[in-house]
Image (cartoon, rainbow, N blue to C red; front, side, top):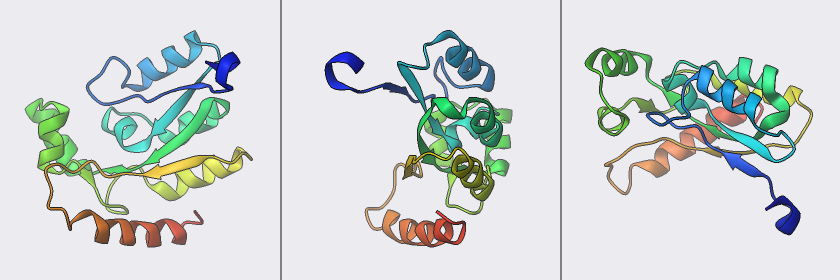
Length: 152
């Protein structure tokens, strides 16, 4: 793919998959060629699985291909863990929340990413299904305003 198209493979760790926890992500990064494989750091999924996004950026920053910026509601996450819910029902319960009301704090994540000195593409997401069609836009507007206040 790199030779033919000039593209690196970018892998997205995701909750409830084989590549989700901090240990799994670090093992994956240590086992793959950094010249060929990058990582999509999804801050919400990583926090959902107990990972520290800032630490990951500081340790493996050269491997971060792009960011998915999102947050997890820590109270709902505690219920999800207690009730051993899979990811789909956790999302329906509202585990992924509107910034800045969750974790990880996005300003330190952005600062750590900016310290890398490279341009990173970021997608702002909030897993929310099912939802009414008019629900996401106001959240997106507020989230953009919040992220701008953080220097994004």
